[in-house]
Length: 102
Image 1 (cartoon, rainbow, N blue to C red):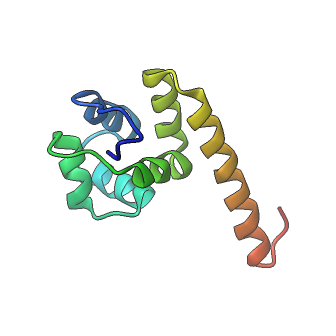
Image 2 (image 1 turned 45 degrees about the horizontal axis):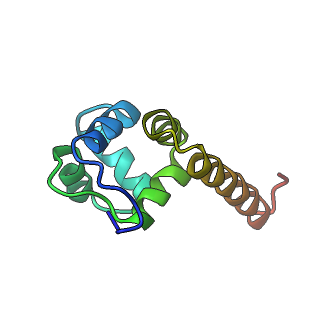
């Protein structure tokens, strides 16, 4: 992780497992949420490395379940709330760009 975030050690893989489950589908889902390859997520699940701050934010913005696990595990409701608001804004923006109504 970037220096802005504390080292999560063995906690981060457990958070991923709690949020996405296990197996190939979990890797794919987390990879899509973080905008990385399944191999990168596999390294996170195995504790080989941790995501950068920007990838952590992507996980929080794109996965409501990860946001909840993050808040429960770390007590950081500020990040969870901010990324939830970003996710809502993105949803509205996408709906409007497709000619739909929010």
